[in-house]
Image 1 (cartoon, rainbow, N blue to C red):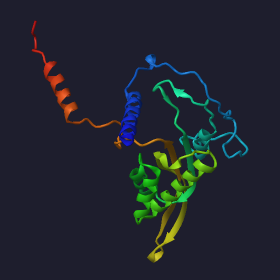
Image 2 (tube, rainbow, N blue to C red):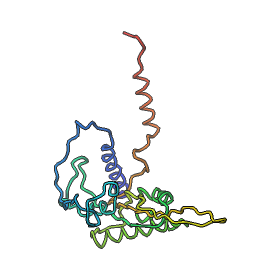
Image 3 (tube, one colour):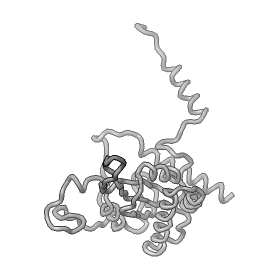
Image 4 (cartoon, rainbow, N blue to C red):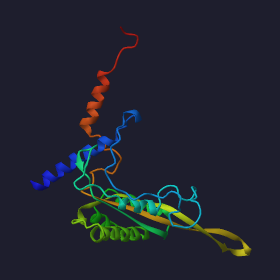
Length: 234
């Protein structure tokens, strides 16, 4: 009975969170007040603290510095998200930098464990005889250890992989010699692997929105039939 109640409660939680996915006009949006603390981001300096002005062509998008910045945000205790009416879930943002691997092959491993329990994700990745899965399993293990040692989360096994994706960091070009003095360019690709663990159970679907079941399709079809009108009628 307890497991059934928890499953029902988790489904209600995700139903509320899915309401935020519905499109809304910008004029109808109501911004919540800033109730959290975050250190000031110095935009006049480079993230690696080098001298000179920051280059907008190199610091765009998600970077390891921006990803780690989310861990420094402090929310009030027992904070309730006003959009959903639910307590703020604990999160762990982790990144491994400069991994010599293909971003396309790492993306397949990330999609395998997206929205799954962290322990189940590590188990599934260890079953796969692929280098990308082995690397991602190590990254998830590091994130789980950070959840215990650094963020003092009591039950890290109850967390799920809310986000996991690679982003190409830099390319080092080299040269390779073939027969008859034919030289070609070889590219050594390095990626950053970003992982976000979230407290609670994952949703039952791996999509942006839940697929309709047979009853919902039937109701949508009935609504279409009842909304039909005759052309040029009174």
